[in-house]
Image 1 (cartoon, rainbow, N blue to C red):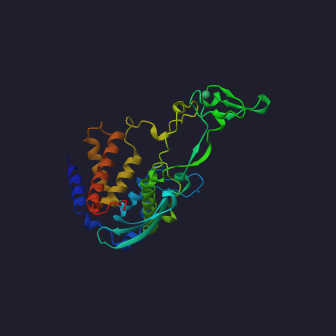
Image 2 (cartoon, protein in one colour):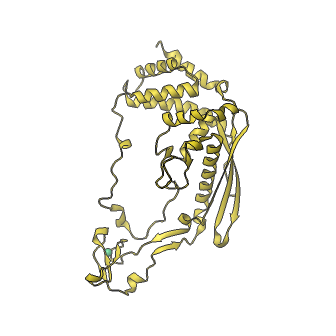
Image 3 (spheres, rainbow, N blue to C red):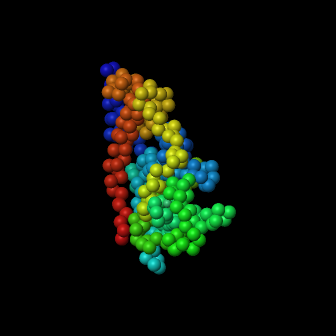
Length: 328
Ligand SMILES: [Zn+2]
């Protein structure tokens, strides 16, 4: 257990973290750190990602913005302005102010707004539903086959047919229609506005906009589409099943990887103030003394999580003061 003191050392330094806190100037100066954080601790498609149609610059996603805040020790404060719009629609405009936790200095502000009038909250797309099987598989029959309507088998339909003008089909709405209750989305748009303001503020405060763009369209995590009526069969789409992505490959059985060591050393160095030698000593000690099979990938992840957890716990204590936005 010769190297055990290094671990105690690491914790000691976490406990006395204020000794290592950066000045506000330091926060602003160290744009380079963002690149390092991004390269070493942020994962593509989790913390940032290239959004189709938004250029090649990666968009900073909410978890990435939070990570950068954690790294730079910035706490967000929100001012929320609510506007009631006609027909029960609502808009939120939010100003996010980022304060440097240890000095209380304001390092940046960002704005974000969102309203239930935005297309994705205002409208839903409706498709005609087969009265026989309940599947959204109705297509216009080709003229050469007599026109009419068809429940298309290739779209999981049942093959039923109708003549042109049949009210069972033609009386059904299709295309865009307005949601009847904008209030269903009040909370979603509030969160969205808050997120936009936060990301905007982080980009401003950390000068990270050179690296990232705002993720204007990355809404999937909050938009829950309205349940579609009677289309149970839709869930069993054939063929279109996504291929398992590379990131899903189980890594548990793999050996400890150099990339893990690099990540730990970088994190321990920048965030915990350890030298490379100290960090390596911690790693070696841990690989020899863990319950995850020794020098395994799993052990590496546990060590990374351990460092992160200590660090996150520290930051959580510091951020407890953050006011929750409320629907005032
Ligand atoms: Zn059908």
